[in-house]
Image (cartoon, rainbow, N blue to C red; front, side):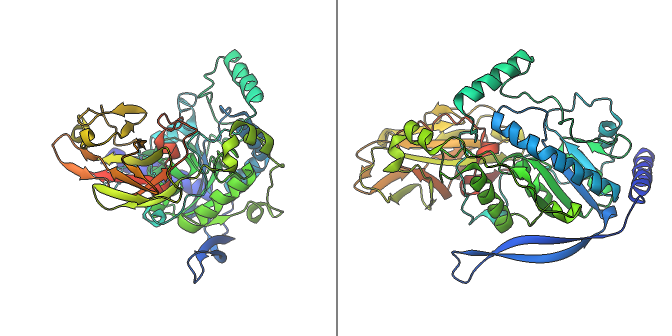
Amino acid sequence: MIKQSLQIMLISAVAMGVNSVNASDFDLQFRAQVPDADQRTWRSVIHSESWNPQESAVIICDVWDAHHCWNAVRRLEEMLPRMNQVVSKLRDKGVTVIHAPSDCMEFYRNSPARLRAAQAPTFADEPLDLDAWCPVLPSEAQGDYPIEQWDGGEDDDPDAHQQWSNKLKSMGRNPSMPWISQADAITIDQDRDYISDRGSEVWRVLKARGIRNVLLVGVHANMCVLGRPFGLRKMVKNGFNTCLMRDMTDCMYNPSRWPFVSHLEGNLLLIDYVERHVCPTISSDQILGDGEFQFSDWRSPTDALVQAEYPSFSSTPLQWRTFTVSSDNETLQLDVERPRVVWLRCAVQCLGPREIWASASFQWNHAETNDSVWWDGTEQKSGDSLGEIDPNEVYWLVMKIDSTQQIRESKVQIQVPKLVASDGTAMDLHGRWEYCTYDGLDFSQPRLPAKFGASPSVVFILDRPR
């Protein structure tokens, strides 16, 4: 108790010293979107707030020194000078600055800013899931996720991507996860800032400093910025007044995926989604006093490349559609006639003690169907063990139906598996799923872990408390 009190006093003293620099409030214009009366279109609404710097923080999400996608690196390099100006201005006004380059804590192991975050005091009222990803908020339940990102969203030209991968290898880095630290272009004030990639540490810092308002900048909006334990969803869930700086972020989106728009248009669609279902946004010009940041014109791959790689898109666009499962044996009405194959997908997060999920399995009457089922990329039979399930992770569940007995005209008969926990409790996966009738690609082996790529239309969160 004495140690915790001393820690709180120390952090409070540091906070007072930092926030006394220039603690005048600053006025911000927040943009959100609300549905029109027809419930099909949306309109922007603006409201003003005055933020006290002593009660405000900025979190810099995953602004790494390298990335596996070359175009993502190039876009981030465009943003970095502007982003550093924003962070510096906020710091000078007394805003708490938290650097959150995930997977890079070893690089900062002995730095004062890292130790300052690691030594933040604990509190009796800490939420239980602070270090878990957040794949969805209740406010997203009826939202239509705007882009397809199951492939990881890389939009590189294949030759350029290979050259970048070779360069990363020559640097001694893993081309799939090449980041080691935060980008050098973002200044870290070791006397005042914090460094952490743990949701629990970030929450404790915010709590100890009396933070009410949280602003996020960084990448990528549809993955880490939304879902990380310190991301937008988690900040909203834990009661912080949260916003995204819309011109200081980027998304991972490949124009060769639905809805087949340019990368920049895909990025804007994702920002629209955030404003509708997660939190409002602001722009950097409100901090720096000039125009909003804009990317160069990114249109890669070209329409010709997309058409050459997926020539059937012109007649059968790859679009996942949502539908509702209300029983174990569901009839799905399709919008195409007699498809050769129907793919179904959802994502599942299993909360609760790990031992509850130590020997979980799926059960369905496989003898009556020709369904193929994959859990996190591994094909399953009814009763097979799913292996150890991590409550902090989100897993893909994929089904493939290609039986003519089950696909009749424009209808398909679906038998939805039950997820059986280690204690024998069987749970129904009733609710919203997604389906696709495209048979030109194999969706059983997702490139992207579900915690990154799950859309709110397809997430089941199953809680088995002790």
